[in-house]
Length: 374
Ligand SMILES: [Zn+2]
Image (cartoon, rainbow, N blue to C red):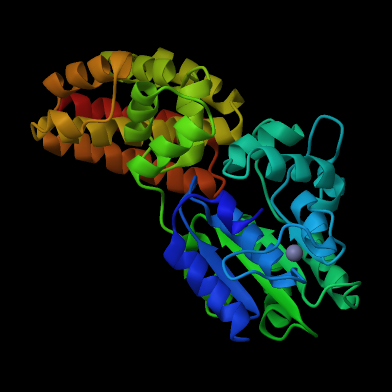
């Protein structure tokens, strides 16, 4: 990845380049940006620049032996750690970054703005719970104990360290603080609030802003061949996330909408037997799908709040989602909507901390039914 392949954010690129040329490269940096922002591409371009043997003023040369390998993600001094899970053919104990390197290179080459769940689909994790394990932290330390093969800097890029198991995070604290030789850690996070403070305090933060609607629109037109009108509509809905924009533009809708709509109807009717049936259904979904349903519900509540304050212009929904929110809003008020949002939020929180999905979902249904009828 070269800086020139990332649209905009010149202020960030300049800062990063300056640091290299003035020999002020912090040994542990945290590229912090929202999902769908260029945080991962920026870290990749930075790593390429660091080891380029013919650095230009604004970018790596793209031609030297280092750049050629960096651009294929096969440089022996460029190491990666990222969240993985078991798959149909790989048991959890054997699932490490090195197991999935081939898929990882494919992901970086084809979809470097992709989300964690797109990554999971690509390597066959089918949205099982992702994590960076304790064993992974051992592999990180082992990889960095070797001398650099050919480059000036050994670079360890950790994508989404928020998926690190606490023991894995603790295991790398020492090396993160005092790496040997010229080792540079590039941590790329979508959610710094989920990182241990001990990791945060050991890294220098590089803030990566989300794309503007206009930038997303330009990228969709230039790189993805979308017509101006469609690019504009999708960009407006994407909230600055290129992965979300591409999802909206190219993927078929997932079934979160239908499921959430039917669930809310069920809560309206307050049918306890059905609620129990639904909690069994919920239990059978993958963890990521469970989380995605609750997140989708939160999104719908936010949109309901938006139209209840009469601000139809800033509503980002269209079609069936729009009519659902308009109908929902008729039977709701601000207070109720907020209470449901809080319930969904707390459900999400507990789900992430491994609450039993069946009990959690039934409990949520009862709480929501009570709010709706209050
Ligand atoms: Zn080069």
